[in-house]
Image (cartoon, rainbow, N blue to C red):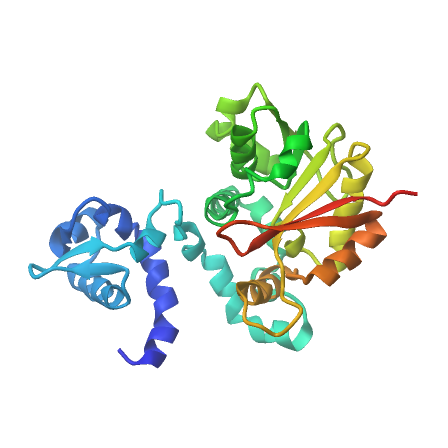
Length: 327
């Protein structure tokens, strides 16, 4: 396959493999195409061509008998792998938004709004199935990208943490399990928490974790001495991010801290994964990734100041710690 064909076709081939759950069927042993096609209810010939293309890129291997097995790289396609990207690769909404991305570059406005006739989070609120898929993507993201967050030394001085926009509670769960002295509050929109309650995701920690629903542009629950915002601020433009931070400062306990977990753009033009995420935020949500200097600029009008920055182990993410400006 020519290099230009790989660039053009590979993302779609991976998306198809993710949506069909091919990797899950090959996780334990090599499978022949006919048996695999029967289980997946797909055309054997078409499946074989897909698998051979992906095997050429290292996601599957093929033995002398024509059986396909999952490789280490292919674990990205598994539903239950710590490095899984299956839900992310299955996200058709983002592909649709990118089809209109020329408009974003032309106008500065997110293409998602035009493609769907509504904003990103309104779309999630209006369709429970779409919302649940987004929740799952965020849970997948939490297990893959936030390594080291739960074991930060900063938790030693915290009594109660409010996870702002915490979705299903995957991050909060990992923090509470690693820090038995902590209590937690999971905060998100009512529809998100309703789905979370149905799944029972938080049940094992119910003695230490409560939930609260609302709008973080309006008001946040009081009583926590740490507010955790994981991949929240990059969803929003500067004005909206300042509003969220302002509500956090208002609800934060005295001497409390705001913990912002995000990728940080380099001040220079050096290559970094945050640059690609920055494009995604621009096209889909109208948000952005930011440099440390830009985060300082956001914090100031919200009455906060940066006190510490910690790079997470084995991750491109960092935790920015901020406290209320002392009068």
